[in-house]
Length: 185
Image (cartoon, rainbow, N blue to C red; front, side, top):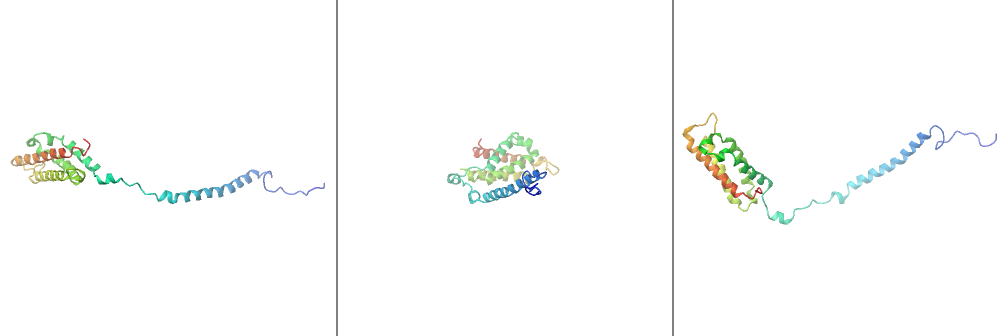
């Protein structure tokens, strides 16, 4: 009959079986530029000078001018406090000296840390001197062969070994007194 010639339907909405595929294709094409724009904005924002050029906070001048005990020093003083409860510190030195090698190893480590970190203490010079004397007494204990084991000299050295251990003990007691406030105790 007259009218418009029959044409195949044009692609688009309402044009047959491909309607769903075409709609999905158009959504994808519309979202892709928006997604690219969003990614570009995020990347640009991450490089923003206001975000990346911020200086780290500086410690106040009062903290820098009044040094105090460091965490390492406080930990070493706490360790010395624990070491002071060992039988090598509490029992008669004549009885325990052959079995104090581990006590002295732990003591050396903590005393060395206290000596090296004493700068923050008001009595730093005294603490360093005491720590040095404790370490010298511990060295004398080793030099005199006082520890147990296969090479221990036995009874002839007992007096000297007890004396060496006694000097270590006296030094530890003095060091604990000198560092009383360093570990918050």
